Amino acid sequence: MSKRPYEKKKHVKNGVMRVAFAILAGLVEISVLLVLIMMGSYRWKLVSVGIEIVGFIVVLLIYSQERTASLKIPWIIFILTIPGFGLLMYVFVGLSASFLGLYKRYRTIEKKLKPYRQKSDDSLHRLKEIDSRNTGVGVYLQKTIGYGLYDDSDITYFGETTECLDDMIANLEKAEKFIFMEYYAIENSTAFGRILDVLSAKVKEGVLVRVFYDDLGSISFVDMSFAKMLRDRGIECRTFNPFSFFFNVFLNNRDHRKIMVIDGKIGYTGGFNLANEYFHITKPYGDWKDAGVRIEGKAVRALTLIFLENWNALRKRKQGEADYNFSIYLPDYEYIPREKTFIQPYGDSPMDNEQTGENVYLNIISKAEDYVYISTPYLIITDEMVSALTLAAKRGVDVCLITPGIPDKKFIYSMTRSYYHMLARDGVRIFEYTPGFNHCKLCVADDCVATCGTFNFDYRSLYHNFEDGCIFYHCDAVMKEKEDLLEMMSVSREVTKKYEGKRAGMLRAGQVILRLIAPLL
Image (cartoon, rainbow, N blue to C red; front, side, top):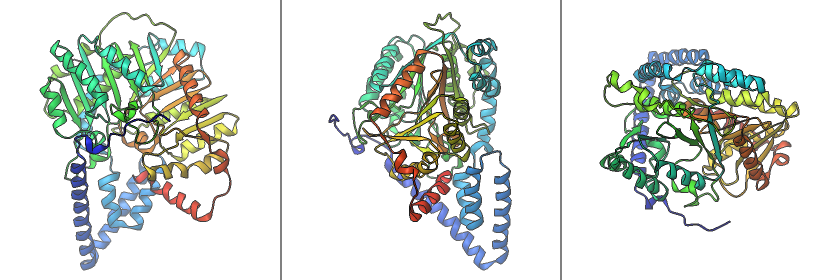
């Protein structure tokens, strides 16, 4: 393994102290409320009875939610076992932000975006002619979720992030009208510095540049002066859901998307953020493995609209109708694809009851006949996903999962491994990426369909975060992704045999507890 410098976090201006103070403030808030509840329960029996009644009502409400039992049962047990503390934690962590006034803003922006997302069924009919088995997921995304299928675009797969970064910069330099960027984490250092130089130059040329990043995701990489620095350079900048010192039930919902759009004609997405470790400049966890795709053509409009959703919904000031003139960002032009390709970019949001990312994965797994290869940095999944993976393996499909060999979060890594036994026991093959940390979010099946995006196989990605991805069918990118995953497996250690046998009683008990609390995090 090649040696590379390790740039420690302290060398980069960041907001870690702000997080520490915010967490401390949150703990103080919870502690004060808990003490008040305990004192009230001790002094007045009516308060204790009231808490139990409220807890029972909340449990009934949780049970009635249209969500997987894997997500509901841990909260039900927690609240019934420790009513006061359980209720407090549910308010702080478990509540969906969809009940807030923010929900109305998202519904408003969705109505504005809907006419631009509408698409005819012609592409679906053409896909059905060559692949009726996988057309169902395309119908689901277009008819139910609202993300159309395009056959007038191209997609290029990058299994090496440095190549993708070079490609991004080359196309950024050609931008003429606008550049949109939405990322979970941005580090104000070497890799992003290359991009920033181009953005600054483009602003001077009159190009509209917008940068949107998640405050919590970037908090270990940048401080509060970062947004001001971008604005001083003429770059429009907004921060998603800033980390505050006060009660905020929306804090649990993060913007985990990774999107770059150039002039509405070229778009990028994938698993990597704009920080040094993603491009091998620093190596805190061995060789960092990630991947992404470049989209060209009409399918880019979907990424553009996904960006405009959060950019507008989380505005700080009231906007007039003129701000909803999205057509200026959706150029009408002719594009002739290099190959016959079907591409479908899509987004997911915690503002509805539709688990789009998980449903796409479940569709692909359930339709696989020969193989399905999956790469994910975290494996914390629902019973429905466990059943889909094991049933596929039982019917003869070669189901392979690739997880990290070196973890970035040891506690989460233990949770990931707690799922190995039930999967390996039923025929799912499990590989740990020996060279380092595998951050790819990939799925490919039967040489005909693949996905690349930001969706991890965990509750946070599939239920709590804003995410995006792209599914593509019958094209060179599908085969490139398959080759990349096979190469990853060749340098990984297969641990299937190790985990398929019986486990010690204490280990089994510990893993059950880990899986029980996983949905609460």
